[in-house]
Length: 261
Image (cartoon, rainbow, N blue to C red; front, side, top):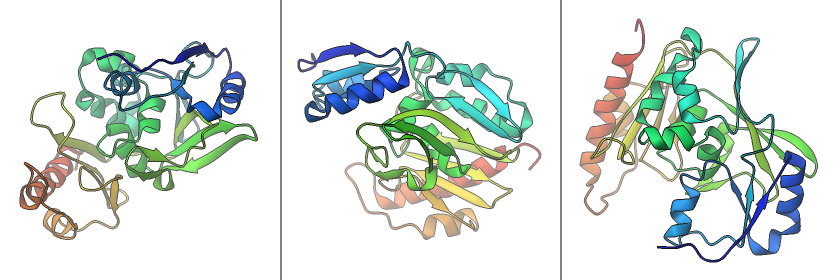
C-alpha cells in the first residue's frame, strides 16, 4: 500500500513546528517523529494527513536527564536510548520495560513522545506514564503547559493535545524503585493482548488491553480482585473470561518481578 498524497515540511525548531501546525490546520497536518506508527497507518490509509511536519532535526528534543528526584525524557528520545540507559534503581523500570516494545528496529527508530502522542491503550509508554504519574510537557502558540498523564489519554488514539501543540518532554516526577510492567502477546513483538504495570509503593496497577485508555486501579487489591472488578466484554477471538484470566496472571507476575519485592 502507498499513502495518500501529502506535503512534507521539515521544522527547525519547536516554534516553527507549532507555527506550521497552525498555518496548515485545515488540511490535518501530523507531526512526524520516529514514524513507526504513523507511517504504517498512512500506508494502509488509516491516516490521511495533508501535511507532515518533520521534527526529527529539531535540536534539544532528545535526551534523558535527572532533575532532582525527577527524570526528564525528551520527546525524540528513542525506546532504544532508554533501554540502554543506566537509570539507576529509581527508574530502572523504564529500561526494563523497553524489551516489550516491538522489535529492535522499531525500538531504534520509535520515540517516546511519538508513542505517547499515538495513544495506543496497550502501548508501554502510555501505561508507564499513567502508572508513574508522569507529566506530559507540550508546547503550542501560547507557550508550554503541563498535562498530567492521568488526564492526557481521552479515548482510542485520542489525547488532550491540541492540533497545534507538540510534545516536547515527558517528566517522571518521582522515583519508582518497586515498579514493574509485563504483558502477553500472541507472538513476541506483537501488540499486547493485555499488559499490566504495578507500583508497590503507591499500591497502583495500570492495565492495557482492557479499555480504550490505560486503566488505573488505585488502591489495587489482589490480582483476582483487580480482574474481577473490570467491566469486560467478549470480543472476536478474545472472550472476556480469557482477558480476565490474563489480567489476573499478569498482575501477579508483575508483582513478582518487582526488584526485592
